[in-house]
Every structure is written in structure tokens, then in C-alpha cells.
Amino acid sequence: MWKFSLPTHYGNLGIACLVAASLPLVFSSPVLGQGAVSACIGDFSGNRATLTGTCSYYTLPGAAGAAATVPTGTYYSGQLVNGIPSGRGVLVYPTNDRYEGQFSGGVPSGRGLFVFANDDRYEGQFQNGFPNGSGTFIYNSGDRYTGQVRNGLQNGAGTFTFANGDRYTGSFANGQVRGNGTFTFVNGDRCTGEFFGSDLSGRGNCTFANGDRYTGEFRASRPHGVGTITYRNGRTVSGQFRNGRPVS
Image (cartoon, rainbow, N blue to C red):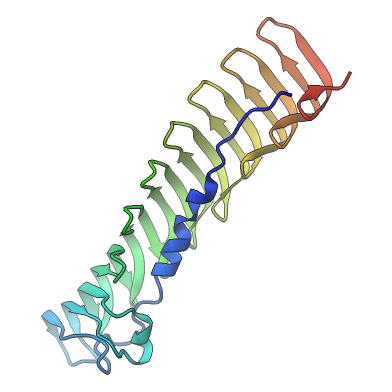
């Protein structure tokens, strides 16, 4: 039965879920409220509620108020405006996850780099505390994604390159391959069409390293429906296909 294989480990795209879990609304009120943080060390002006300048501190046990969403042991070093991280700064979580970049209103916003303790990382645009815009995910497995991101997940146009050299370029939705795109394999195979996760389903075409070609309908990455196979020797078979086989 004729069928080609697609990479299936799209679970790697879930890095964004970790980003979401690690990036709460960091500071929505002055950082030095009611024992929430240690002494602010740096160059700043103003009282506890209106600190403006550059400051470094750790959160302490017993945080109260809005700052209680920040885990004990969180470290921030950077610029403050009215007691809230704004401008450039570094945020280190107790898990050793780390964000370095722009803040606005207490949350990562602008361009930044988020590095996980396991060395997975995202570099690109942030908005409201989450990856939003365009950026690059680099995984410790060697996989890499570059493209559009929305709410911490791959959404829109992008390219996912697998550690073995296989590559998908096309549409993503909610962290999954979905829509029109092209898979290019290191063995020389190349398939273009409508993808849903690890399957090519709908209209598409494939050119294989051995010279064979198929154009037509697919289901679950098999020719299924109307299509044409052109073999490397020039022979063609057109008509109905079912589960990868011509219907005689």
C-alpha cells in the first residue's frame, strides 16, 4: 500500500504552553507593597508606591495584594515606572526560567528572550506577557520554528525545521500544522497541499526522490479520490484511488 510518512512529533510545539504557565501578570501594582519584595537596590527616586529608575530585588514569602501572583524567590532587575517594571529588565523565576527584554505595565511586552531551565527558548515579540507577533522557538531537541505567534502558540505562517533536517513551511493554527504548506524531506521527497497535523488530506502533490510523482486528492497521507501517478519511467495511472491504491 503506497503511503508516505510525515514527522509526527508536533508535541514539541507545546513550548508555548510552558511560556503561558510561566508568565503570569507579573506586577500590576507597586512592587514594594506589604512585604511582597525585599529591599529595592539601585538608582531610583520616589517612595514605595512611585519608584522610578533601575532596581533589583527578590520576592519574599508572605506576599500580599496584587503581587501575590509572583512566586516566592522571583528575581527582577531592571527599570521601574511608578513601582512597576517598565522598560528593559530581567526576570528570573524560582524554576530558573528566565525572561530578558522589554516590559510594559509589569508584563513582558516588546522584544525579548525567554529561556527555560531545560534550555528551550523563544526569542521575538511579546504582548501582554505572552509571545505575540513574530519570533523563533528553539528546542533543546534541535527542532526550530520561525514565524508568526499568537498567545504563545504558533499561529499563521511559519517554518518548522526538524532536527533531522526535514522542514515544513506553511500555515499553523494553535501550535499545530494546519492549512496549506509544503513538507521537504532530507531524502529528497517533497509534498505540497492541505495538512492537518501529521496528515496530508485534500488536494496536494508529491514528488519523490526516485522520480515518481502524484497529483490529486489525499486522505491520511494516502492517495484517495481522483488523482494521477506519473512513474519515473513515464507511465501514468489516472483515475480513482483508494487508501493509496488505484481502483481497477
